[in-house]
Image 1: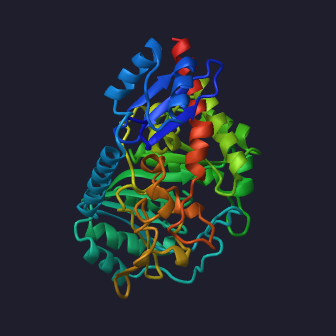
Image 2: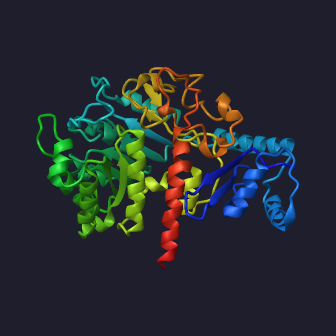
Length: 432
């Protein structure tokens, strides 16, 4: 009898020397103290475990009940069943949602925009929209994306989509500049969320998010958000964070939440895509500390973590995954060049398209869409695979195969985020 291979051991980096054990086979998570940790570390080096003394016997019985000890054959059989169930679920999941990337054109000139290098000369046509509905005739959830979806020249296209699916639930990602001009149209369908970006207080926002000719945008965006709230259209304010604007972002969030209309918005505070890994980690930890201090309102980014962090932070059920970013493999973004993407960060990068839908539908044999832990050689034998899902493919350098692992996010999660979350929860419990 030996410890299972699919076992994640996380050093909580506290004074008590605690660790978390996470069982990749059944989802159990257990907290062990210093003495128990020493025993587990000793057992991890043994092929055959024989408990010595009463303390080891007690720990052995507890962990045996929770399936931390299995033969290699038993463990592999269980893992195979888990993967087969996840693959089966993906195969039978209905494609009832779609994102329309209406255009890559935008009236803003944000310096950090990851779409700046994308060609902008095309806009979707009604024929393209028809093709998307042909591929997914029962669309229940529809997203609008760009570029900027609510440009004035896109109005006819959006009206066309609304007419084709008047009962669908809609969401949009927009810079928010033309919300007021679109308000009459937005009220004709049901929106579950409109995401609008604000980069802090008015001065800082206008320094990073301005129109093509440099004109400010803050006041008009705020006016549009207020109109949405007044008309009961849910809004999430996204704030792009860096070490330079952190205090300003926190200040603006507090100012908004102190208003009557601000009590009805959600927030997503997310480090800029261009942040380095060390800066990103530092910013996440600072956000967790703000939460500990009672920073008002939930930050939605902490609702989208990998399974282990999501379990510890949000109390959600711990479930295995075979893909990191899109566990069900159902995200679809359709762009004006006829390309299909399955990831919002890949949109516009033609080499990352998973296929085409116009003029002909064709999916690539090897892409982000087909990538999972069964296709990535290193993931097949990795003890973290069912919690990691192979990592985000967008983090793989362009010179590497799409079926390469991206271990950074999971390593950062276990080495930094989970210890920080655990400290937060301990402190919260201690103040009750």
